[in-house]
Image (cartoon, rainbow, N blue to C red; front, side, top):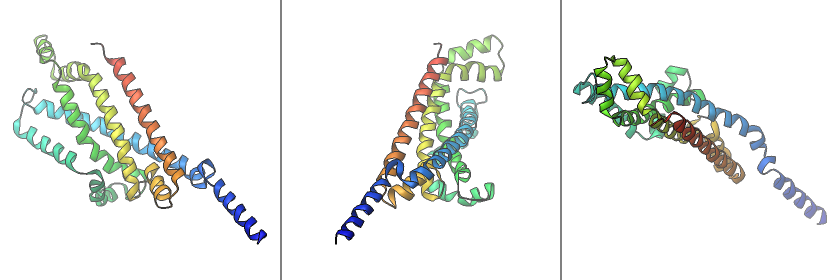
Length: 238
């Protein structure tokens, strides 16, 4: 009997040691999962900011007060943006699996997850860009036109420059939203911290894994927000 009790205590002690930073899942999986999340965030974030900026500027340019006002083109672009923003990300990700396979050869892993992440976030950022640009005082555009500025100079030298602090704040919000999307990508094999939380934290009831993943994501959000605020203040000369 004493031998059995001793064995049980030892087993409990051993199992107790396999938690938190002694948990093999955390020791072996946390680092790669964190790296995958940063890779998804970096690639899809960069593509979203570049392509979302161009789409937002196209909306402004073809809008009522734009340099190339065209109601039909604006309505088409606007409806595409509305459609993209209204689609829940998890449904969009599943719907895009054939397209993702065609583009990158697989629907699994962080590289494949970048496709729906980018497509899902571009309309979101484009609308924020449109709002930020439209808030620029139109008198500054008229003054630049009177001085003979070209269309490109007005777009990049006046509109984008004046709206830059707001555009950076919008990019910050978009990156934080993308971080949430990367966690959802883990539900369908996208990898990253979301996948780690689901595989071990939820399915294996490892609360230590779940807590560490949540704390890490909260820290990353805080760092993105602080960096975005600092950069926005740095370029704000108003």
